[in-house]
Image 1 (cartoon, rainbow, N blue to C red):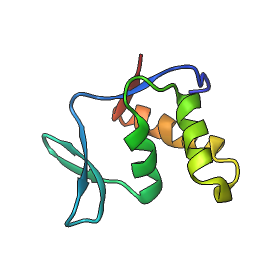
Image 2 (image 1 turned 90 degrees about the horizontal axis):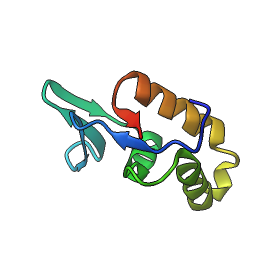
Image 3 (image 1 turned 120 degrees about the vertical axis):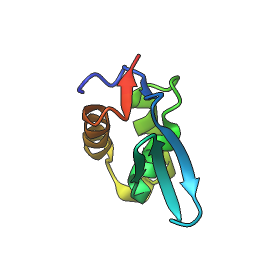
Length: 90
């Protein structure tokens, strides 16, 4: 996905929630659960079906200025999430 003007949305088959027992965000789906690392959890929290990929990138770069340019890492994650059908674009 190179078009940062697209709006990602979480697939309705998945539900994002913070799992206290795991101390991380997870994606729940009928067959199980995907445990997300901290970075993936931060990105997934911003996927609300309204923000573009560009706005998500901008928001995370403001939140974590010490991390430098996060654009490629975020785009890579969004691509993986799309391939795994965790998200789709509207």
